[in-house]
Image (cartoon, rainbow, N blue to C red; front, side, top):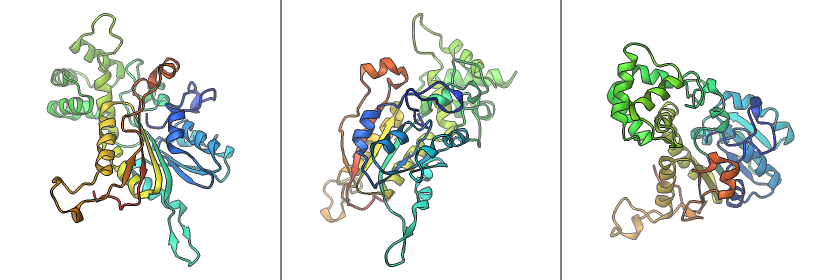
Length: 337
């Protein structure tokens, strides 16, 4: 849920219904905010995580979001935390560059950039984006087939109406794990020959017609297709990989990385990244000389991902697929990418 979730009981930006921060107690416990420290919230959204961090300790937060509408709405929140909260329009893959706003001089007059005490990422599409039909993320309401979290680049409609049948099938299979990807892609290409696909319900109805739907099945047949297109439009998996690598470089020894994901592809990337960085690695063979093996750059906090309780899911059904993984930075050098 890129953009995070807003605080319960407070109005979310742009008049959208209020949002509930997913796994908030667990996020705060893993991040452990302290006075005088600096944190990065890579997915500001309605400000739920940033607010909670700032209220937990007398610290500073640099928050990022790639959605221009979020940045505009954030101006309603920043005055509550003067000189403590900064919100910047940026994808979290560029967090390392944006972090340079903290550059200063040390006692000897040398310019230095302080390392981060913590980084938190809430991955995927936000409730705010899902709830606005004009953003094109939801198959439940009609809207333009957009799905862009930012304001630039190809939309979902652009991809569907120009990509080859093979490319569309690959997107649906790789990003959505859709087993019927070839059939859906074939139907999309056949449909666009007569009329371009431009609306969310057009696509949702097409997929349902191709796959069918069992009576009483709560999961819409277009769920995986919409997920796959959204990931492709926003290059989400590449963004996540870049953000994890940047966080490894930015965090100080003892700094904490907390990541909340919402589907298996995201969670797999985080799990594999942390497992790789927490083991002594040398590129494949455990028989290589010790001197060539990299020291662990992270210590994993929870070996098994944390999930929401039944109580949280009952209050916020969109939290049901969330998983939290956390790790603490060691004093070893960052691994070479």
